[in-house]
Image (cartoon, rainbow, N blue to C red; front, side, top):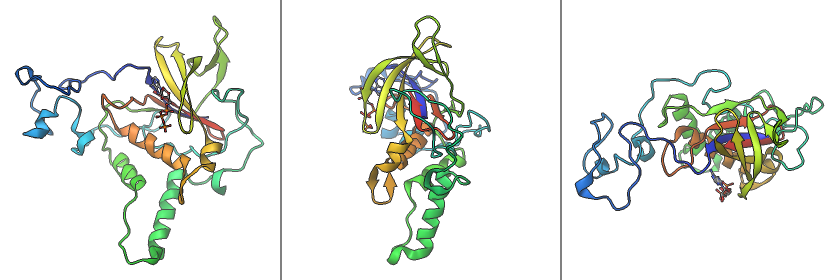
Amino acid sequence: FLVFGFFPLASPSPLRPGQARVSFAPDPRRRPSVKPHPFRPSGMAADMAGCCCFSCFGFLRKLHHRPAAGDSDGAPSKDLLLPLPRSSDDGSFYAGDDPDNSSSFLGDESRSFYEREEEDYLLRQSDGDGDDEPPRKRSEDIILSRARNGFACRDSLVRDTRKLFRSEDETTGCKMINQYVHLGKIGAGSYGKVVKYRNIKDGRLYAIKVLSKHYMLKVRVVRSETAMTDVLREVSLMKMLDHPNIVNLIEFLSMLRGKWCAITV
Ligand SMILES: Nc1ncnc2c1ncn2[C@@H]1O[C@H](COP(=O)(O)OP(=O)(O)OP(=O)(O)O)[C@@H](O)[C@H]1O
């Protein structure tokens, strides 16, 4: 499974000091009192001060913390494209490692998806791509460079979980993945389905988007990109963003040699 993260179901992210919800018809007499902030501009931009942090509008600030190593490093996962094993019945669970499956996606498991993408980009540059235009930076390069330099607009890092185990809830008999109890399908998107889960640790509901790596690698969105590229780019962006109008990515779950991935929101 590629597990992309958990967002609290239909519940907006909590406000930080100095933040307020978006108001489309603001009453000028009731302006929120916002403390002066070194990154808050004046004029029209200042009117937007209440709705989110400025990173979402291009006023990027550099956070003091750096991604830490380990399960929750907040950095793009390095193992997203390694092949996973058997699929589960409904595609909503990690089905276990497959020790016999030693091949890797794209035939190279020594480098991550992002490393391969970077290398391809450099090769294209050195080839000149057959035209005289100067090489343009791709969105992946920009996102990666910002993440590596600590630029993000969220204070809490997205958990990056590499270990998945399946079990059953003792009370209800429902299937479980890690601490999440399967409650039922909510909907389906272009690349996978969204399932409702309850976290037994905090009792809250979460939506988990479950995606098949195998399927996403087969779907080509443009000539040089697959659906996997698309999804990983979205995850990279969500790892950096914190905005009331964007679902909050909580956890990205992806097993080495797993067949599926999932995003919890
Ligand atoms: N956090 C959530 N809370 C409640 N329902 C959700 C949540 N996330 C997704 N859903 C439901 O699952 C459906 C599919 O979501 P998903 O994100 O997979 O697709 P999409 O964004 O509609 O389209 P695409 O896959 O093209 O991005 C949504 O239309 C919605 O009904």
